[in-house]
Image 1 (cartoon, rainbow, N blue to C red):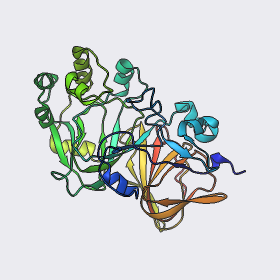
Image 2: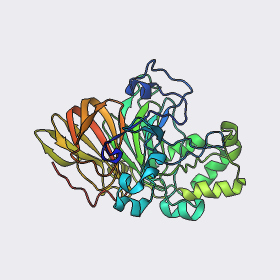
Image 3: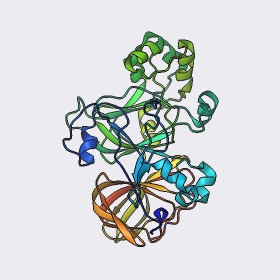
Image 4: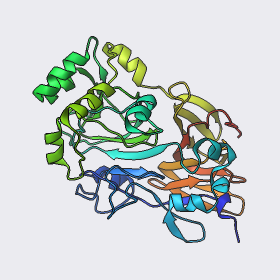
Length: 370
């Protein structure tokens, strides 16, 4: 019998929450591609639970996989069959059975609310979480029928203070809070880093891959009575406690528009290239130590770089295959795969573009083999 841990694992398509999903369905070749209530946010290769998980849906947010032997189970269950064989010693020593990274698709039919995520230190201190929520966005699509050209909100303007946010929070003036942030038009192919503590939001019409720390702590500067009316799963805190938590999670560092672009819009950095194609960092160790991801555009066969860590693979365009000793699996737009850390003879082949998502720690042992 072929070793399950020496070949790719197919990930099933999931949706977690949100309304919309038309662009996500198109991308995944699902028909009919329409907006509905089935979900517009997908978690790919996730082994963590969403904050809305409940006794009725205890594993909400967790990815499922179809193993090479045909068995279907949650990815965390498959990893637990043999964590060292799936993840490798370096990864297991750092993350145990967690993946150290969370990958999502976000299909914003409507504007996302202004929000903030905690740094790792604040997450540990206030939310008893080992991870904060630093994140990044790679724009893969834009809706032509959005109410205005798609954009993101990212970072405070110069001079914004805690007092400014306190006043607007208490007045419930969300529009004024958004005006304290930079509004940045976006185009397909751009990558943005969103540092923990920074205000941010996706504008309507943006379709992105999000790569982030594995954490689901999101704070919205809206009073709890409003949040409670919007979500049956919302857990009440005393209003002063919530106000301190959300306003105290923002980091009040503001910059001009050009400086903000310089800090958050990240140009690709070439790792390797040749007649076979090119691989670039979209987010690398220069931007964050918490995760990284690369894009490979290939025209012919090339070895997949051995990192000593597992990887999550997203197929963006074209058609190709992932070959390995003893077989191969297809790659088409919308396909998602989990790669155990050690797949002998792993080769990317065809005319295909893919994203490789790497957990924290994977930067140091990159082999860059070709």
